Length: 182
Image (cartoon, rainbow, N blue to C red; front, side, top):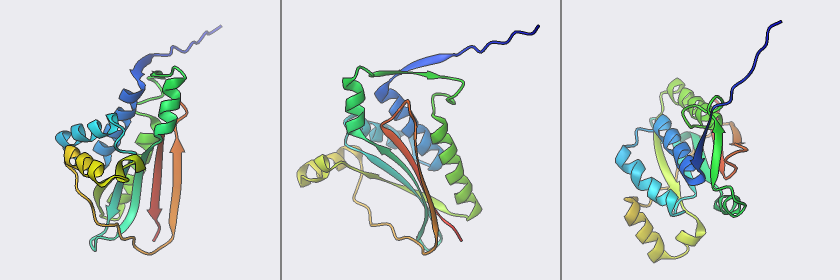
């Protein structure tokens, strides 16, 4: 009689460390962002100055045809910390080099879309109301992170498909895709 067993290999991360890892992986997969810029952005995440990252798929006319989103729910993050969940153990057989499957699969689908339609990518950050409500605070944060205000994105016309994914282990992170269909 054959016997089988499954061995779970887990790795433990701080909640903030794992969150920053997801953002790093996603931005590296979907943009040509530099390590220097990523390091500055991680300061913004660490200080809860950023609550959303958008990566846009732009056509030759500069119109947006797709969007990859990483959204951080800082209230959920604080709740998890208050509940004693400051560290997270992940099953390394279900995560790829510390990255959630949802992050990798959404990034890969976004990249396939970008390649299929010969698009280019650009990214933007969004900030919580606690930062943007005060002009001086917002200006200071932008300066610290090496960011500037961006022009609004203009969307191409057409039907779209949209989805949002949430990982049950890292519950404060949502991954979204919005793609225009031809």
